[in-house]
Amino acid sequence: MRRTAPRQACSESHRRREEASRKGVRVKTLVLHIGANKTGSTAIQEFLRLNAAALHAFGYVVAPTDLTRGGEVTGHHIWHIEQLRADIPTGRERLTKQIHELMRTLGEDKHLVLSAENLANPDGAEQMFSEVASQYDTRVILYIRRQDELLLSSWQQWESKIDDDFWAWLVLGVGVRGDWAQVLQAWERVVPRAQITVRLYERARMPEGDIVLDFAHLLGLSDRLSDLRRPRADVNPSYSDALVDLVKGSASVFADRHDNTFYNMVEQLTGNAYHRRPRESVITHAQRAAILDRYRASNEWVCANYFPEMAGNLFPQPGPDDYLVLGQDKLEEQKWEIVATLIFKLAARVLRR
Image 1 (tube, rainbow, N blue to C red):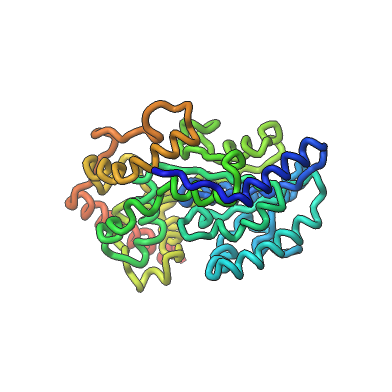
Image 2: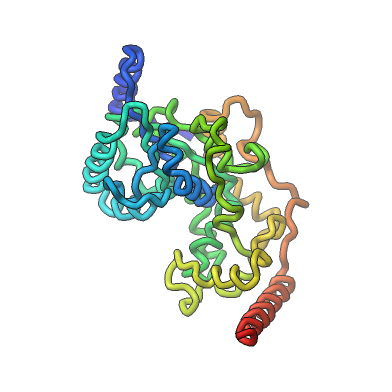
């Protein structure tokens, strides 16, 4: 895959920052956690929300959700970015003014932090940061995961709520969602590669298997963890294939792809009983291999340019015995179990009143 050269303006801004550093002039830093989706972003954002005050004392200022002074701090900026990217040129102008105003109020030893996983979508949203990246030392943090797991998680989290045909959706998404080379090449036109950190979303590579600890380490806060609060486990869980299949595409259950009311109800009634089991799968080993083959060139580019020390594949390849494939009979059996359990739990609540 051919690498797209960064814009000259990006290189020039990097040169100016290096010159300022040599002169001992402190340059304000903008830290962008851009996701990607389904790589623990919600946990990171909850960490930022819970610790906004403490992080300020350690030099990191979590930007208000709407990027306005005095705005609410929720730890994420997804919806504001979503609004701005509807018109990229206008969004760039507005975002530049907002970031500049927030930066103006920061001390020279502070870092402004934004988190929005939709910034890793291939829709040009990175272009909105071209001006601020030329004015401020901008660092990008991206977590990536193996594409078969990304696609299945995305189906469960969003698309199954508005679509009832998994395979039709999957055919359209394979090769597009999770093309990490495309995402990185787009950001390299805005921020120098040296300012982009890519992490593999694999728990075995993270301290204590915790992405929040990994993120804190990237911020240089490993020795401050005792002063920081940790989010609860499973901040944004995935649910079992049987539960997802039971209600997929149901307009009577979901208002839109972001509506979690039904799953919140299941959580309240059954706890984590119907969270997704990591080894269960609705696709076969051959189907996984075919999906990953579509990303071979993209993953090779990422490996060569961001993980040159790694030999072989960017991600561990799935083996034929890694997953328990659910046949239709087993899926139907689990769906009836879910229905019976929900009826029983609801009846028990009613009878206790």
